[in-house]
Length: 393
Image (cartoon, rainbow, N blue to C red):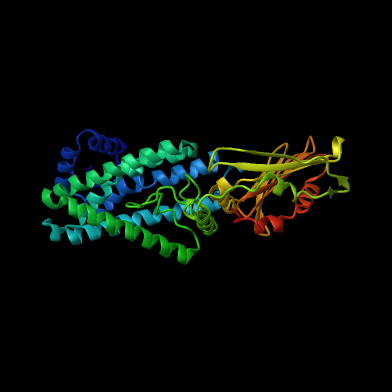
């Protein structure tokens, strides 16, 4: 690519070169006359945009499918702001890492050259940036994670080869140079992201989205790379509820049945049915009952999802307010619990679920009563008593 010449064809040709002839491509790059501005204009600004743009489209259009929650789409306004913050941080971190690469190069037998160092960082990280296109479809999940890991490994190898070509680091010392640069880059990315979050109140996308040398490509909500303050709190709750604190055995179904109220809305409780099932470490138990009969009947169930606490903790970071032609779906926080409402207006059918202590799911279902009634009936369950048993084993 020559100075002042922006060509998508040349950009794709350069990417192809890294894939099929990386050493020859590095030799060509080392000999090119260029400037930082042209490197940004012709290469960095395009490649670094792939991940945040893909994330934006994937989360805003396709949304995330979460167990016990359903499909969640992130608000466009907040998502756009985080995308822009992450993108700008990525551009900044690239330049800072390049300056540090140039500074430490002489210690490993190479030469100090800021432009050559910028070439090294910008071109070596191309595979990771390109792999970010998989964020277009969040459902790719494991496939995307494996592809990103492979891209990361290849980028590190390109960094090792490129250091020898553009900064003349001897092959015997290139591994040490590469390792130190990776460590410096990770620390720098974390520091810049933390500073941005402290100043703006926004969890930066750069660590785990578009920024080089990030160690977490999927921080925040699974597959999103978004880490809002609420999501960071949820992650901490998930960690405390996860394997590190040991397995949690669900309560006996009979214990759950004791929390079902005797009456709701003047309707007497029918027989209580209980259920427990699952493999070791993945067990659930539940109790449910019907109140009244006919069109105005209400069903209440209480399920202990102890083995899913880490995932349920993430529901506390989600808010949803979606209206459709047939009704609406909402997810919101109320008194420290996550409340999920689903309403079908034409059938006057609704469900109101309350997640208590990131563990118990209280679900009220009814045909006829409005959502306000279903929500009130959910409160008829001793939610505070359930919350006290949140850490019971």
